[in-house]
Length: 264
Image (cartoon, rainbow, N blue to C red; front, side, top):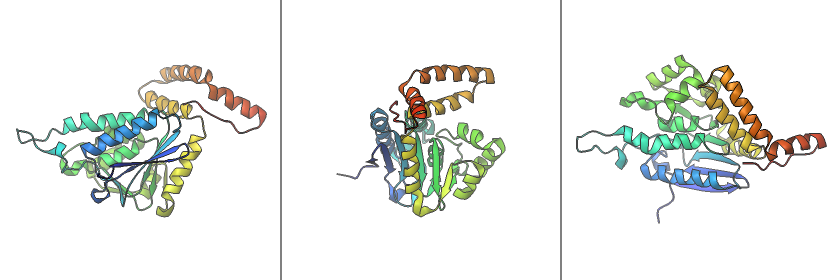
């Protein structure tokens, strides 16, 4: 049997998903997309999972779309339907990450290019090894940023920097990405996974339902005026305020003990 294209490992409440095509810098194929979606759906459905870490095997995180994949073969008209590839694979991937019921951390261990870069940036938090880099490689082959890149980059960086990265396709170091606020943290290569897992365990011990709803609120607020955002805050607080974790957090604070959160 061939080795899985996505490796799954659990450490207590933290599940690590490792993209596993190291010889191809973990570039995406239709088969790897399918395995990754199954793995993400399984993590979302498993009540014991309270945080997810995604990384890549070998020396790269993900080099984007594998241009040799069968999905990129020209049709009878001699043209590749890249839009169909986006609709079939990258749109559901980006939306699955944004709808996960638990925090998702990208541990970027090497090059993250094209869709691989935007996949990492679409996670809730991205931590990169110092040797890692981010490349909006689309302009080099006549395409636009995908996997949510057109939505993410301007919101993370502002229009000028987002356009600069997208138009030039220049490599961005992990250090610079952290300085620009594109990622959460840049760390030494040797401690990347320890740092990512420590953060994941920290988040897993927190009220993860509230963390996931915070992501939802931030994303929704980007499309709202302030009054609408305040209304949304009230609605979300009403729901969370009736949940176990709020009562537990208040009780633990009053009793001066560590809280035991369980909502998801």
